[in-house]
Length: 340
Image (cartoon, rainbow, N blue to C red; front, side, top):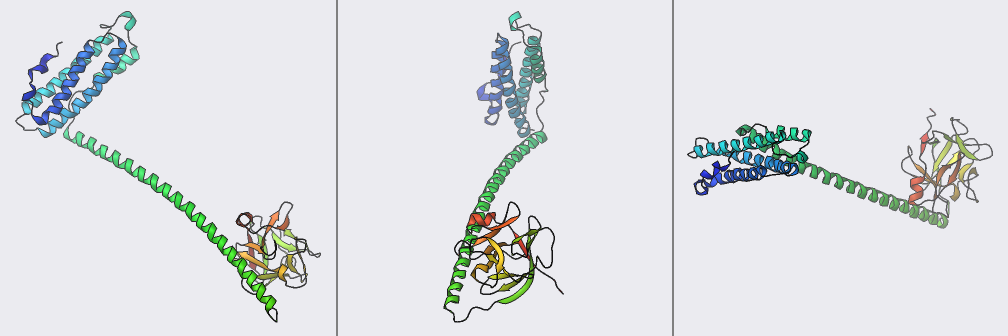
């Protein structure tokens, strides 16, 4: 079947707004001429794919003309262009059918039946141009796709920004806590200097009777008769009760109710409840509120301080006072006893 029918239309006779569609149909025609001359299955398969793509573009251009040229003086030319495109598509389908029947193939060039069926099915799709509503829907979906892509990029950028801000806030919090700990250390040292220069010692004041509970394990801090400190799983009023006494700043002392001794650090650096008075080694401070606090022995590590921690074997010890030691320190709850 000849493909020369499009040559009856001269380029000069095509209006400017229809030349894009006319050129697309001409491109489709040229590729069909190449398809007609293909000798091998591989060449035909490639050419079929190219023709399908070019046909899709030509169909889109012609469909646009259908919207823009209703009741137009060029309606006859549009009808001829639509007819030519349908004729070209029919020609492609005929080539596909002949290829399936091996009319163009030698025994060595027979195509795989499954691939051929898929190609033929594709070629035999309807050639009717899309309606105005369908084209508007396609355009709307294209806009939606672009907008969704932009929203996805914005969301990704915001997520990365929030991650960076969280890291910055964590860094600021760590630095502020370090500065607060250092300011407390300076305050404690200043109060000690004031005590040494004062004529009379600073008076202590009773605050309340409290018990101290290890938050992670739920066990209670208790003192035995020999003054050793440890944890027990049940609360005992005598063994687990301490009188909290305060003096300058946030410093406080813990006097055991039963033994009447003060909890603090020994000369060897261990934790015990054997002191008979509220001295420098029996001074305590907290990082946080009493409900969830890290307890610091103010005199540990040569006056820098050390946090009370629970070691293996359910034994208590004093660690360092730096940022890393503070992060690793245990949380404690200092709860006032309701003795009403």
